[in-house]
Amino acid sequence: MLNVKQFRYAADNLSYVIFGREEAMVIDGGAVGEITAFLEKTKLALRFVANTHGHPDHTLGNVSLLKKYGARRLKPEELPDRFEIGLDGHKILVVQTPGHTDDSVCFHAESFLMTGDTLFNGTIGNCFSGSDRNFYQSIKKLMTLAGHTIIYAGHDYVRDAMAFARRLEPDNEEIDAYLSRYHPDHIFSRLDEEFKVNPYLRFNDPKLIEILREKGLPVATEWQRWESLMTLE
Image 1 (spheres, rainbow, N blue to C red):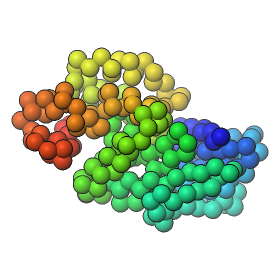
Image 2: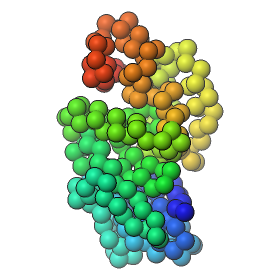
Image 3: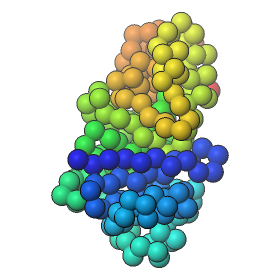
């Protein structure tokens, strides 16, 4: 069995340690001090340092961790889709998700999914790659995962995300329930919860389609609905 430890750093960034009984892997390790203390306390051997994408706020801990532990760096641009990372006899699966950036990847470990800036809890990332089509395909790929999949994102944007969701759909009672489960010391959600509140996963939901139609936005095809959602602010 693999476990996940989350660390907050800067204003809203999130680092992760995936670990088994003896070995560990760091993802987006900006919380260097806290991660180092955790590894020293648990006596885990750090095998891999990885990033969900190459933006500096996600890679800033790499040098320190690699130097201290001699771990192997897994660069996102070098990880093919469905590449398997072995850790303590378990497998972590790479899921390529271009859209936020061209090199964006997620890491799927058992029931956990580290999504970086592709899928946040309650929203999605900005499309800095310039390819809405790729982003659309990546989100659709993640939507096929099991509903109990736990989403661990690269930032905590939950309150802003739910404020936007409420402006868009003020009668959605699921938003209050979603916020009641939120705690800034441990940010996560299940994929099936995202389908109830996250507009960017609901482009086939009749309620969202009607909202888009009332705003005069194209809704005839799934792609048009995705594009329409991406224009909202």
